Image 1: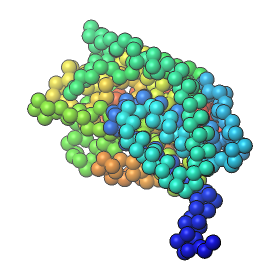
Image 2: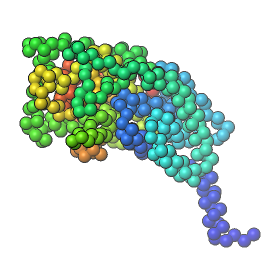
Image 3: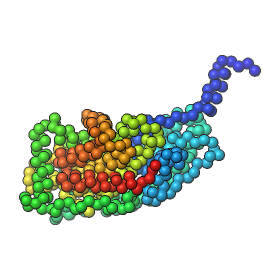
Image 4: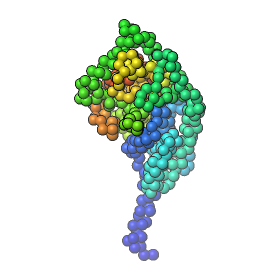
Amino acid sequence: MKFTPLLIIIMFWGCKNDDESIVITPDNYHNSIDQIISVMIHDIFSPPVASRIFAYPNVAAYEIIASNNKDFKSISGQLSGLTAIPNYDKSKGPLNVQLASLVAYIDVSNELIFSEEPIVKYRDSLYTNWKSINKVEFNNAKEYGLKVADHIKKWLSKDNYKETRSMPKYTIKTNDPSKWQPTPPAYMDGIEPHWSKIRTFVIDSANQFAPPPPPKFSLEKGSLFYKELKEVYDVGNEIVKKGDTCVGIKTARFWDCNPYVSVTHGHMMYAVKKITPGAHWIGITKIACRKTNYNFDQTVYAYTKTALAIADGFISCWDEKYRSNLVRPETLINKYIDQNWKPLLQTPPFPEYSSGHSVVSGAAAVVLTDIFGDNFKFDDNTEMQFGLPIRSFNSFNEAANEAAMSRMYGGIHYRAAIEKGVQQGRNLGAYVVKKLKMK
């Protein structure tokens, strides 16, 4: 038989396809998380719900890594209700662990979002490319990744999320001035009043790290509560006078992260879509992983540990929010001090105490410090997609402190919610670091 040059080329590429391995890089994982976040912004997920979307897919990916890398330990049995994932059938040949991990991440993520089409297109483009490189390797990894994803989906289906969808809405207590009221301009109902009923991940219960109660409500000018209320008013007025170059204004806008911002022009109202506080800290995790040149397995580990602290942080914070059910500064200032006053940032639609940004930032900062070390300098470009400049920090704790104080500058939190909130988060983060054995 005579071999033509064309036939030789075809035979060469056919053999190459059988032998070449599919290379999965940390950027593949970063990019996949970015794809999910873009859909989450579009779908306007609340901060607590968004934290759930970060946690479960990362756990799916991590468990595959941990079962095949001696540097990491499985967290089955450590997280509430999580059992061991299925074993891979080694008779099928070697497993591309990173590929299976990424398949599981994408599949579980797609289960938790609303707008599936963009993720399906993204997934299918990856599948087509991987299949063209090595069909057998791809099919084995895909089959196992989806098997693990199904295991995680069964676990997440029992976390009480579906049950909370049909629970009663928040009841407004109009006769009690200390209780939260819907705020302008949209006057939305209280978001996720039953989030404390969601199954926790690492912490034992929603109220395990409950902060001390907020200052006793009082409109007497000498009371601690009134002083904190007046402080919000005075700080807000002061930074507005200084203008857009003011550090307080820049800080507040950088850490806004409110997915519910509504803009009103005449009779028209529309939403300005942004990331959630949890997504901002997931973005910081990406920055840290890239700066340290973390490999794929290390990257999955960092995301997973941080996401779990964030998710438990929201459960802990929301437990306190609807227990203390404290009125926002905007409501009281407009009624008792200045009816024309507006906060720099739009007030989010849920009770004031404690501050969600403060709790989540405190928790994430402790975990990231445990992973990457203290005094870890980084440039935070997370908000550049929203037209905001890069801010630089000397440590994760410094960033957390700034994120917490941004809520005072923004006019949406009293000092107690900020200071007690960040401590609540740090306590929770320290518990996650101590209890969760991942290495």
